[in-house]
Length: 121
Length: 108
Image (cartoon, rainbow over all chains, first blue to last red; front, top):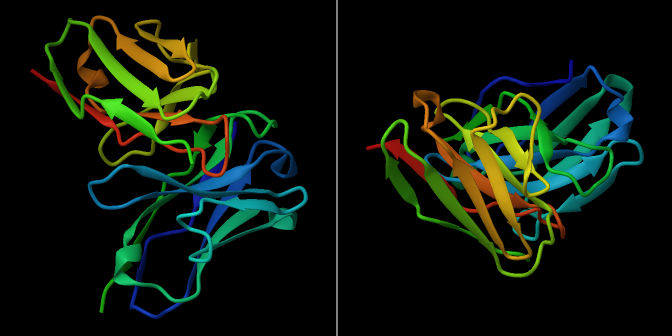
């Protein structure tokens, strides 16, 4: 069974750094793209970026390029989403999700449970 | 960037009736279009991909149609568990694989 298990909720102050994680299991981690999706409170889904753990090929939405960093450690089947300096506007739920198929032209077939990030002074 | 536009923003339908949700792409996405369902407090769930193929475990009352720039999700005979927010997503050109803004399906 494919599972994506995300790290727990975080409460941070503006200016702090943060790295959240997403551990995949039940499949070959290196063979499927994993992406990150933001959902701000009461709002819709936003595609942030995606990584291929096999070779760390990473693509970012122009809206998020330079704002976050996506990485993966294939030795522990874990993908990461990282901020260098958080802002209050980064408060949101963040989902990791795996593409349904090995091909990059595929929807998100599997989702993590979400990580709530709250940034407040 | 391909912009996805969903309509209506909110749809009020009675249980047992049919619901029709629309999604339009700003440029052709071929049949690389997915629909997701999201219930409060839950992660989204893939319903339809390839514009018309139901994902594993999705009941046949959910159907998708369209290609190019115009797409439709139809839910025949609405059940209580179908009231949720629905998103379309194109996965033809990245980045990003953009989502629509969502349609909230509520009980009339």
